[in-house]
Length: 240
Image (tube, rainbow, N blue to C red; front, side):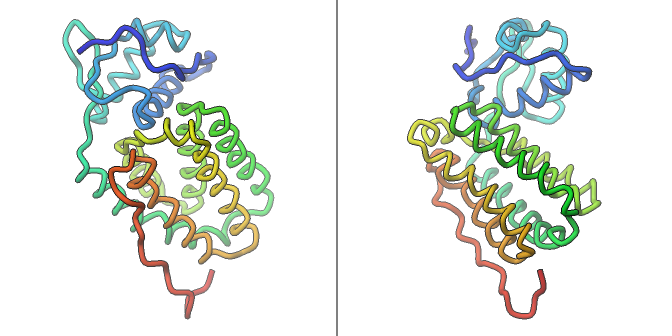
């Protein structure tokens, strides 16, 4: 199946130095958020018109996504968005729960106070895009915030692993959440996370991150699974 027009929330991009990378980030966000639908074929010229750039960086970005397994090339037509199974989403969520919450607890005391303003600004952007129901920018801002926090671990392999897992996630329920206004509630969890980090409550930040990631298999995924109810970390005998 080939489509002639993508979903309504595609964002016209401003040209930057690394246009290929910028387009790739936007395409990943469009796929993860469901703006680009699984199984649908999208052509580079059509996407370039929507993004406001030439077809070349779009085609190059799609080839990058093909190597990541997010899309598959369809000769003479374009690229088909790869479908992700329910089992795959369960496995991705399980891995993220194993890695991200304890990492957030560990890095919380390592974040310089001077960085709090920048991090809170990133969290504010997530809320802003949720209010505007701009799913592509919401998903990209969410990715940037999470990976920025994880980067304080000084472990680039960990950050790359989570980045790849996030790219393989599908959050097909975001559109309905945006329409109902519930997406803002989820977005505000990023501000709550910053409150905990700034208060020096690393264990609280870990527990919030555990609940936050649990949404991936709940409403964010379109109600395919109830929110993951992981056992919270015990506070006894563990520092922040």
